[in-house]
Length: 150
Image (cartoon, rainbow, N blue to C red; front, top):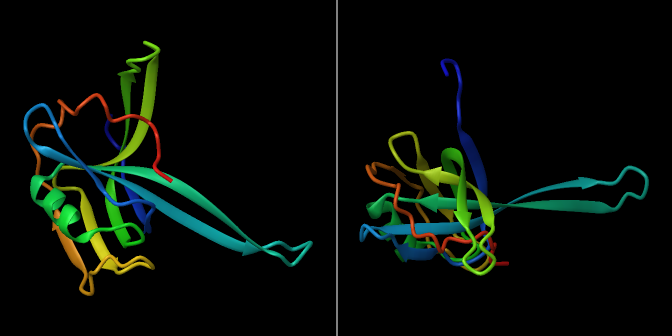
């Protein structure tokens, strides 16, 4: 469809250490659980409120997966640009179709920038940006379930 755009931009903190898995083609994929929060003051009570949204981020670029594995830890703050994708898979135990919506980082339109250490570290002082280039993402392991680790 001409004139459409699928782009997601998020700044948040990792809710768990990155999960690295091997696809059936032998390449590695990284899964991140990213939390974004907003806070406000309740007008009627004056109480501070906060709401957190959890996002699943999947990274297919082999070089970027290595950087993620080396430097990112739970609590690290990152900026990601990717595309929203919904994946259908079959639950092995129940046999039912399941769906997962993810932010996918692949190709030249994706970015991951490490913004610095988090409350649990993260270990990055300098901003690092890497554009992704990946050709085959069609054979992701089917065990990428819909559970968010928090």
